[in-house]
Every structure is written in structure tokens, then in C-alpha cells.
Length: 146
Length: 146
Image (cartoon, rainbow over all chains, first blue to last red):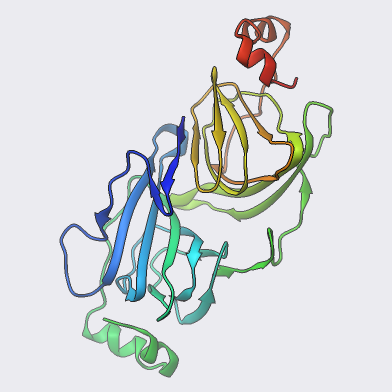
């Protein structure tokens, strides 16, 4: 079965959703499209997230892992205490229970494919204690939006 | 952890391998790079395959499913008895036990990311009876390279 891309970063038969259904102010300018929901021996989902220039995903962690491939633009990502520049076709792995946040640079969209297990736990956001720990690193403190 | 793309369709710390270690004449002009090998709740592999102009993958089927995203060039794919044109960011799903083959068009590379379960069965190639069945459809018969 082929799901054709319709135009730039939209696919036929796929709706564009808000990043998180419950809303919130802990993320900014980001959309989600689900391209595949599998079961059986390939019980994973493939989602496409797109962050508009200057936007960011939620700073969060969870038990499930992420496998991300950048397919549009440029940005930065925090994984654990490491901040990296990312661009086209870079592959980002987020291990279980690791703080992470994606940001699009000012002039660029950041679009990425993300593979996750179809069955997964909910994301946790940092409490005051965890934010304090994260902010003990100056680069991390400058980077995060919480 | 970030695996940066090094140049066009090569990644840092990733070797370029033949498509199949055992060799053979049932495929043509195709390479493989393994970008991620996961376990735990994300027990999948992410591979990048690249077919040079005029080349093709093996005509095969297996119990495990494939989740493919085209990231370079153009080509055609057979899934079951359906032949489709595919291009940038099209998503191809190959269900269990479904005959499939990828071909790059004459003037283009065809490069794609492929997600599969880390633990999976071996591919089967068609025998004479199965080839006869496949060839009962004229478009399929014209398409396949076995």
C-alpha cells in the first residue's frame, strides 16, 4: 500500500492535527500527521511533526523510545544533557526516560519523521526539582522552554 | 544521540554494505546502510537502501512487514499485484507475506528508509509455481525481475 505525498509535507488521506490534543502552553507552533499505525510484528507508528520557525516541542520524557529522522529544515535538539544542531536526514535516537526537546531555528521549519511503539506510556513534564536539575547546566538552561 | 548525515546519502559511523551479504543475481545495483538497531519497546531497525538507476531489489515475501519512506529519487514498487510510481516522501507499507519489489527508474536513484522488526524471518523467493501465478497478470509480468 502506497501513501503518496500530496504536496510539500502533507500526505493524501492524512489529517493535520495539533501536536497535542489536550493543548497547552508548553509547546509552540507544531503540527502532527500520523502516516502509519502498525500492529503484529511491526507495532509502531510513523508520525510527521513539523515545527514552524521559532517553535518548539514539549520538554518531556517517557519510558518509550523515539527514532527520529529530520526531513525538513534545520533546528536543535536536546537529548539528556546534550544539545545538537540537526538538519536533513540526521537520525536522532531518544532512549527511554531521557529529557528531550526539539526547536526550529528562527528562519527554518523543522520537520521530522518519528517512529514509536504503537503502545506506549504518557509523557512526563519536569516538576520544579527536575527543572532545577536541568537548569544546573548553563547551555541546557539557555536552551529549554518549559 | 544524533547520527549526523555525513554527505549526500551517507551517515557518520555507518558502513555501506551490499544489499544482501550472500550475493546473488536476483537483485541489481543496490546498497544498504543500517542507521538504527533498537531493542526494548522499540525493537526495530532503520535501514537506508539505495538502488542505482535501472537497478532493483529482490522479488520476495516474508512474514515480517516493511514500512518504507522514499527519501531520494523516483521509482516503482510492486506490492502484492499493485504497481505504483513512488517519489520523495511517499510511504510504502508491505504487509506480511506479500510479494514486493522496488525498481529505480532509468534516470534516477531510488533511496528509501525501511523500518522492520529487529527479529524477523528470512525472505522467500518465488518458485516456478509462484512465478507462474505472478506472471498471470501482464503488468506484473512486465514489471518483475526474478
